[in-house]
Image (cartoon, rainbow, N blue to C red; front, side, top):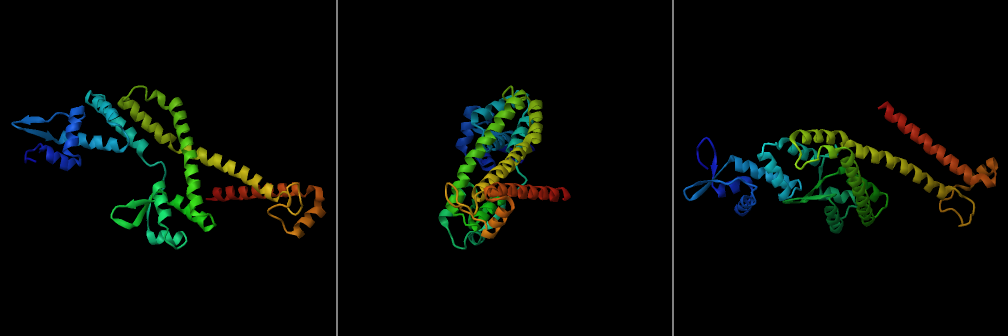
Length: 304
């Protein structure tokens, strides 16, 4: 690099500062992604504009863009259409979709939370699923992208669910949730974002407005899923409990209930409503208890 006011680089220096290889830089030049260097004698001279362009390309590649789409974006920028809004939209979409912050956990802490014994196979599977991430150079440390998800797994394990069943359930759940996310994006793209993304790449103003819409709509998917999951859990949990307790203490077409109420309780209910109405009474009592607990929970939330 020279000592002039404007920095100058040989291709080897440019590779060192950008993190790209010399071969990659030449390939970008051939594709038209990188402006041609200045020819000075037998040497090519690069400047800070080349370094900035390489860093932009690397950033967009990290966000999942192809070289072809990056070329379109950069050509639009070079033509004066602006890239700030587009990069702002990219940053908004690529940003965190949750307030949860990643944490670290040691292998010893991990063992303690899951039975106290090392399980390399379970750790490998957790890393494959992204529940854990290995930290280079620290084999005894892991990054936990979602501490909440790991805490759920630990609670299920403590309740008696095998690790293999937990990971199997997560794989199945992930596929279903990804389908929901895909449908939500299709829905919002059709009815909201289509007007901003009519041309590729979008104008600076349209991209900036689309980024604002992303910020507004970001929490809606989770709020909708939370509400619908709560509704479905209450519905199916009630049915599940009714199915197990509905014929408690009395033999039905399929035999005794898997979960039996105390005999004294069943006799008291029979004396109160008659033997023919025990199941109906238990169902009603269950629903009333669930409703009461829901009301109490809502009242506690309101107090906060």
